Image 1 (cartoon, rainbow, N blue to C red):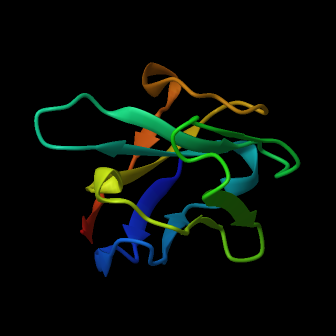
Image 2: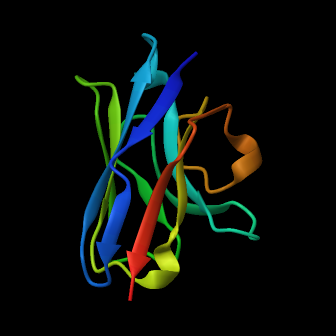
Image 3: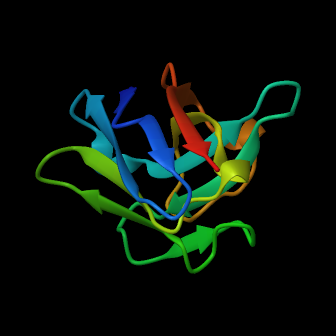
Length: 124
């Protein structure tokens, strides 16, 4: 079991950058594929990025490809989301999640553990 806890959200101007962190408790971080999702008001939770258990494979939503980078540090039990060239449409609550799988997974239902979320607001 892992308990994700996100941090790093905030208010940024369009074109700016933020780095989200997701620290996990527990001793089985390397067992889980990890993902980032986001949810804007009135919208469904959507996939943003995912990284495999080993960290060698990644997958991105088309809307963030080329701007966002997911990575993981096994020594720190932490996964990161570097967000560059932010747009107002990136405004949402960002969630980190863990899935008991080796590969990358872009689907909400396949994730077992979720953090509480961190707010990202991009002003125009």
